[in-house]
Amino acid sequence: MDDSGKKRVMVAIVVICLVAAGVITFIFNNPFSSSSGPKGPVQMLCVNPDCGYAFEISRNEYRKQMMEKGPMGPMMMGPMTALHAFTCPKCGKKSAYVATKCPKCGKVFIPNYSITDDYPDRCPECGYSAMEERYGKRKKAK
Ligand SMILES: [Zn+2]
Ligand SMILES: [Zn+2]
Image (cartoon, rainbow, N blue to C red; front, side, top):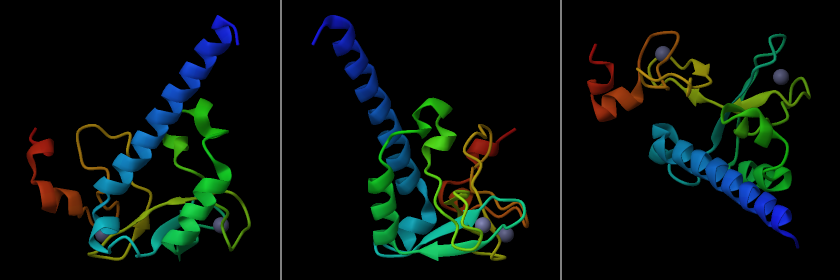
C-alpha cells in the first residue's frame, strides 16, 4: 500500500469513529432509550410526507439493520444522515429514522440535533423536553 492509500484508510477510520461516536452519544443521551432499558423497543418515525407512520422496532432488529447497512453511504452527507434511514413498514421507503416519543402528549418526532441553544428532544407539540427535566434549564438561559 502506498502513502496516499494509507492516508485514505486513515481518513475512513476517522470518519467511521466520528459516526460511531455520534451514534453512541445519541443512544446514551436519549432519555427514552436509557429509561426503557437496553431491551426496550426503538421508536421510529417515517419522514415521508405522504406517510408519517410512527412505529417501534425491537432493539435486536435495530442492531441488525445497523449492522447490515454498515457505515457506507451516509458518510458523505453529514452527521444528521449518519443516523441510518430504515425501511418504513407502511410505505416501504427508506425514510424512517430513530425518533422520540413525548412522554407528556405522545407525539412522535425526530429530535432536532442541529439545534444549539435548546434541547434536541423538545416536543414540537407541547414543548416538553425530558432532557430539560433531567439536566435543568441551563442550556436555555437567554
Ligand atoms: Zn412510511
Ligand atoms: Zn409533547
